[in-house]
Amino acid sequence: MKRWRRHLLTGLASIVISCVMPLLATAQERAVILTNAELARVVPPGFYFQGLSAVTQTRNSAAARFGSSRRVIAGLVDTSGYAADVRSKYEGFLITDTTVLINGTKLPTGAYGFGFSNEGKLTVMDISGKKVLSVDTTKDKSLKRPRPLMMTADTKGVRLYSGRDYVVISAQ
Image (cartoon, rainbow, N blue to C red; front, side, top):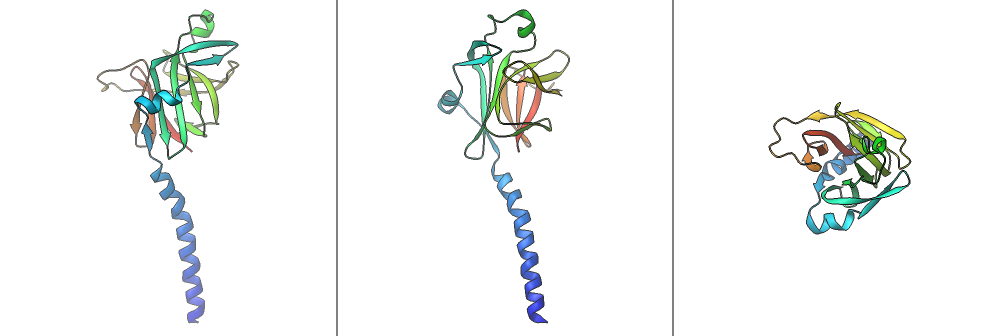
């Protein structure tokens, strides 16, 4: 009887440990906003979208690292060479080397174009211009100095801002 109880307790302990370990690993992968030299190493000088290459606005670029090796990179680009209909929906790029959630919607690993609309939406497109996802943004009225594009840490990941409008990006 004692042996049976010991096996039961050992089995239960194994189950609890196997359930808790992934949660601990996720908690350790808190997002870190990249700055200066580390940011300069990961932001590309230009981005290809719908058959054209646009120069990255380095001052309006941001990146975050989840854990030791997973990154999300965003930047605005100079869209002056694009047609007006493309410029109205495309303002920058989003590169992720891991699957992420944007406001809870899954976005696979890849390189994408994006645009924030005046109607409170973020639209993400593949590099051919096809819409991949569209999510509502949140307005941060307490933000003192909004910038055209920036990232800040959030309890769920990072906030990607366009002015006062933002979405939350988290690693999956």
